[in-house]
Image (cartoon, rainbow over all chains, first blue to last red; front, side, top):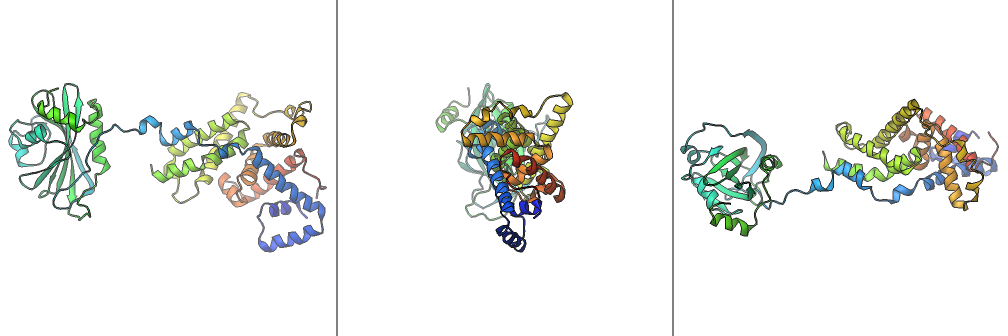
Length: 245
Length: 168
């Protein structure tokens, strides 16, 4: 019988009918049976000769190529409460509105009290400045005009601190995630990310944190060389000290 | 990048290392080859069709990179395969215990096969692919797979001391 056919039989490539025909032939042909045995033995020898990697763990260098080096996977520890929506259950839509970057000459003191968070210096008298000065992280505070605020964390920077704050405006159906920093006396809103919210009921009353806006702030924090979030004790001390370093 | 893409990729790495070892003949070159293949896979992740076989896609990347390396080595005049000297080594291999001798002879025999035959024999004899799967992985016609396989075995079996029957 043709060697290719015998090899195909040994490789399991033949249909059941074809294979049965070969089996019948092999019964009468010891030479061909020997060849089939040789092909099978050669495959076994090949597998044995090159088997070593199969039993080994993935080498660190290859693992790092696929998943990134281990150090890069460790995110700076920033204990933060999950994004929330107190009271009415809202869930964040996935549409992220434009990033608002700091500009000069924004509206004056009235702006923050009236509308959503905008970048720029915060007057001491403003509602948000009060919140930033005294509200510990992780607590929801209801503000006027259907707004709720929560601070996600406080990070030290050179000469002061930054606090990540979220404001949910239920009437405007917006979620603002902002970074406000203080060096000395006054808070300055460095950046605000705004997201539209939809009135979707969630089981636990929590809105999911979209990765985008959280990561968006991370870049700003990195640029400011912000340290890890303060522990509750350190944060309480900073509040007591009026956020002076 | 999708999580399951990376997981599927890392899951096939042991098989890829074995395939690469059968092609290159040494552990370091094999791992370098698999590393390069993973880097290429990450760059081309968008071309991978979700739901298709990761191993098939990666076998092809490994083989392509290997052929590229060998072409460059040839151009530079670098010897890339052990000579027959390795086999006729003054009988040293014959002095090894039976199992080890077989392993050594098998590796040497594989290293002497032309590239196309080596890749086909590896995918079918070691990795266990069907003829059709090997044809798809190497992007060659199934007839080419069968003829390369046939020639590979013609060269290999005598070296393994396995061939006992007369030629048909």
